[in-house]
Length: 615
Image (cartoon, rainbow, N blue to C red; front, side, top):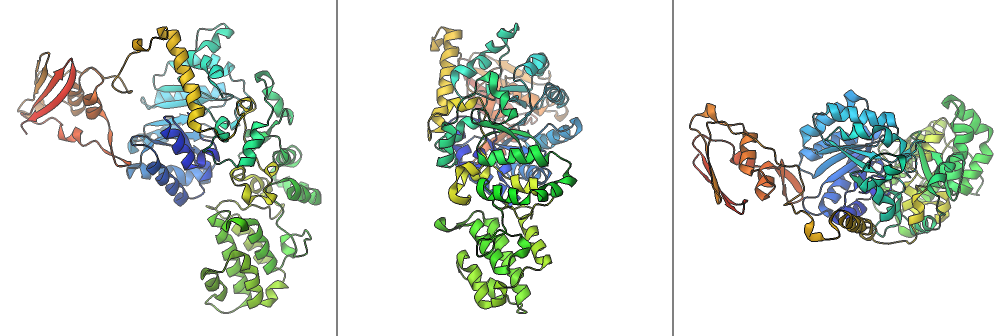
């Protein structure tokens, strides 16, 4: 599978490419800043994947703002029929009571599985506790240890699993998936076979699957900017025994930094990421109430670093190029600078639609200061089609004083408020060195790696590029189709397992009608008459309503003891209608009715037809 990873799997087209190639992928909620944006992305994804494929959202639980709208929206969309199959909870495992409430909501909505990404042996045990208390709800335990490119802790990959494997396997409803540092078949196969644990003097401990993350950032369908892909493939590899040296600083092109969530993250050790690391090592690791004073003490240095090394430059600048604070700029200078940093001239588009709203709202504020005309001459003109690069000139022509009037303090605060407004993509600049500097500097920090046109000078060294320290060795070419990357691993795994288990004789591999839960043996009450032969099974229900069997037991009895089309048809909770899930109404149609007779014709013990006679 491909794990949820912002920004790569926030791209619904990329996720669709992985799904349509035959593999599981999570769409990353970290790239969705409003409910409408989330709905649009999931709508597009549902229309882009093959019939019957499901959507799994990766939602960061430690981001309360995103969780607050994403989780309810996910439940609602599933109730509306969208093919929502699962939820991955990233950024920590909630408390037991909270998780069980979440699972109850998922079960009620018809969502089939939930994934967790524990970061320690203790949190693995917590997931086991959740599995035991969840009444059999399917749980995917994704284990990556400290080598992964995403959020992680300083953890060895193997020791926590050695400690907890028995407890994990005691839960039938846990699927165990290994990630971190995988990029080819040879390196990941021992985790599929379980041979990795033999070196530790233990019995084989197989995982149920593997996940890839930063390995696919250079794939053809990935939105990663071409220059960023080139940086990835030129990064030196790190041996597995040396990956933890990234915690001490840049090592072989990779470094560990602290994200806006307070979590550790492996990044390419380029100028932008190293600036973040320096800020955390010297200022942002101090108590938050001290940040502003520490920042202001190094103000000139930090502004210079922002302008020279980081994807979000300092906003304050006069028309003549002098670096200043926002409070020293005129109204037209603010408009001009905002357009410069949030509108991509050569593409004739905003860096994000929400950024257009920031500029238009400030133009409206400017007009309210300069004119008593409640009709909003400037706003009407802007909406009539004048280009963003002409906004400042328009304001200057209509209100000449806007070019010489310094911002009122309340308007400076208003502009800062616009930049921090919830539900929008964070703008591509830093407007002050206040207490929120660390958050605003890093918020949505990986998005620019897919949008270099929105970055000053289109310089890839300014952005943050997630990359696992061990997996970098496998990314040697750019724009390889993601299907090819995944197929190369999968087919080599299959070949190795076929050789190991069946002496490379594919004819010995068991064949099943479909992959799914094994049929459950049931006993019908004596009130139901059952006649069976080699060619048919006949079920006659009693005339008395009180003697009818339970619906689930009845349908399972009709489905039979083996996997077949009939088993799937009668027991599937949903069916597909177009691209949406719908209730499986055959279960209602075939529910027990007094006096009804059901005949199932068989060929070689395989159901051929089903006939219903009676009520």
